[in-house]
Length: 124
Image (cartoon, rainbow, N blue to C red; front, side, top):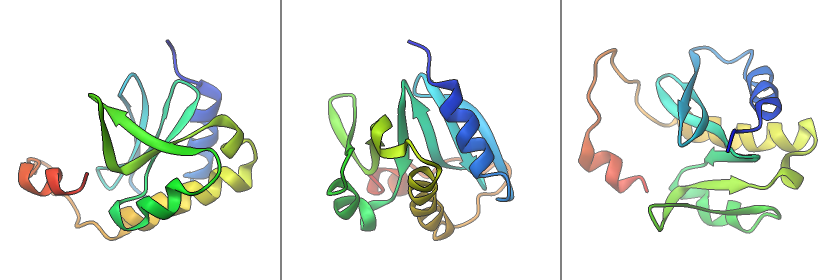
Protein backbone atom coordinates (compact mmCIF):
# COMPACT_ATOMS: atom_id res chain seq x y z
CA UNK A 1 0.00 0.00 0.00
CA UNK A 2 1.26 3.44 -0.85
CA UNK A 3 1.67 6.04 1.86
CA UNK A 4 -0.33 9.26 2.13
CA UNK A 5 1.68 11.67 -0.01
CA UNK A 6 -0.48 14.60 1.08
CA UNK A 7 0.56 13.98 4.68
CA UNK A 8 4.21 13.82 3.60
CA UNK A 9 3.79 17.21 1.91
CA UNK A 10 2.21 18.64 5.06
CA UNK A 11 5.12 17.34 7.16
CA UNK A 12 7.64 18.74 4.70
CA UNK A 13 5.94 22.13 4.91
CA UNK A 14 5.85 22.01 8.73
CA UNK A 15 9.59 21.22 8.79
CA UNK A 16 10.48 23.92 6.23
CA UNK A 17 12.19 26.15 8.78
CA UNK A 18 14.14 23.32 10.44
CA UNK A 19 17.75 22.92 9.26
CA UNK A 20 19.22 19.61 8.05
CA UNK A 21 15.96 17.87 7.08
CA UNK A 22 16.02 15.06 4.56
CA UNK A 23 13.20 12.81 3.34
CA UNK A 24 13.90 9.09 2.84
CA UNK A 25 11.86 6.03 2.00
CA UNK A 26 11.58 3.80 5.10
CA UNK A 27 9.15 1.35 6.72
CA UNK A 28 7.19 1.22 3.44
CA UNK A 29 6.53 4.94 3.73
CA UNK A 30 8.36 8.24 4.01
CA UNK A 31 10.64 9.22 6.88
CA UNK A 32 11.92 12.68 7.65
CA UNK A 33 15.41 12.80 9.03
CA UNK A 34 16.63 15.74 11.11
CA UNK A 35 20.40 15.94 11.59
CA UNK A 36 20.50 12.37 10.20
CA UNK A 37 18.17 11.11 12.97
CA UNK A 38 14.76 9.75 12.05
CA UNK A 39 12.21 12.20 13.41
CA UNK A 40 8.76 11.67 11.88
CA UNK A 41 7.30 9.83 8.96
CA UNK A 42 4.28 8.52 7.14
CA UNK A 43 3.21 4.87 7.12
CA UNK A 44 0.03 4.27 5.13
CA UNK A 45 -2.15 7.17 6.32
CA UNK A 46 -0.67 7.50 9.81
CA UNK A 47 1.97 9.74 11.29
CA UNK A 48 4.96 7.81 12.58
CA UNK A 49 6.32 9.85 15.48
CA UNK A 50 9.64 9.33 17.24
CA UNK A 51 8.84 10.86 20.59
CA UNK A 52 11.55 9.07 22.56
CA UNK A 53 11.31 6.96 25.71
CA UNK A 54 10.73 9.85 28.13
CA UNK A 55 7.58 11.12 26.38
CA UNK A 56 6.39 7.71 25.20
CA UNK A 57 3.86 6.79 27.93
CA UNK A 58 2.31 10.27 28.03
CA UNK A 59 2.00 10.36 24.25
CA UNK A 60 0.27 6.98 24.20
CA UNK A 61 -2.42 8.45 26.48
CA UNK A 62 -3.30 11.01 23.82
CA UNK A 63 -6.35 10.41 21.68
CA UNK A 64 -5.55 8.75 18.32
CA UNK A 65 -2.05 7.60 19.40
CA UNK A 66 -1.02 3.94 19.52
CA UNK A 67 2.07 1.80 19.82
CA UNK A 68 4.18 1.33 16.75
CA UNK A 69 4.50 -2.41 16.28
CA UNK A 70 7.47 -3.63 14.25
CA UNK A 71 8.20 -7.33 13.88
CA UNK A 72 5.47 -8.04 16.43
CA UNK A 73 6.97 -5.91 19.22
CA UNK A 74 6.23 -2.34 20.25
CA UNK A 75 9.05 0.07 19.50
CA UNK A 76 9.35 2.07 22.70
CA UNK A 77 9.76 5.71 21.84
CA UNK A 78 7.91 5.41 18.52
CA UNK A 79 4.17 5.76 18.04
CA UNK A 80 1.58 5.96 15.31
CA UNK A 81 -0.99 8.75 15.22
CA UNK A 82 -4.22 8.03 13.35
CA UNK A 83 -5.41 10.51 10.69
CA UNK A 84 -8.04 12.03 13.02
CA UNK A 85 -5.24 13.02 15.40
CA UNK A 86 -3.38 15.01 12.72
CA UNK A 87 -6.25 16.41 10.67
CA UNK A 88 -5.42 20.04 11.49
CA UNK A 89 -2.11 21.81 11.08
CA UNK A 90 -2.09 22.58 14.82
CA UNK A 91 -2.41 18.88 15.67
CA UNK A 92 0.30 17.89 13.20
CA UNK A 93 2.63 20.65 14.40
CA UNK A 94 2.17 19.61 18.04
CA UNK A 95 3.26 16.05 17.24
CA UNK A 96 6.20 17.23 15.15
CA UNK A 97 7.32 19.50 17.99
CA UNK A 98 7.35 16.53 20.39
CA UNK A 99 9.57 14.66 17.93
CA UNK A 100 11.89 17.62 17.37
CA UNK A 101 12.25 17.98 21.14
CA UNK A 102 13.43 14.38 21.39
CA UNK A 103 15.77 14.72 18.41
CA UNK A 104 17.27 17.90 19.90
CA UNK A 105 18.54 15.80 22.83
CA UNK A 106 20.44 13.34 20.59
CA UNK A 107 24.11 13.84 19.76
CA UNK A 108 25.04 14.93 16.26
CA UNK A 109 25.93 12.16 13.87
CA UNK A 110 29.13 12.36 11.93
CA UNK A 111 28.88 12.03 8.15
CA UNK A 112 29.92 8.37 8.01
CA UNK A 113 29.17 7.36 11.59
CA UNK A 114 27.97 3.80 11.89
CA UNK A 115 25.03 3.14 14.14
CA UNK A 116 26.07 2.01 17.62
CA UNK A 117 23.90 -1.10 17.97
CA UNK A 118 24.00 -1.13 21.76
CA UNK A 119 22.91 2.54 21.94
CA UNK A 120 20.22 2.00 19.30
CA UNK A 121 18.80 -1.05 21.07
CA UNK A 122 18.36 0.87 24.34
CA UNK A 123 16.28 3.57 22.64
CA UNK A 124 13.32 1.31 21.91
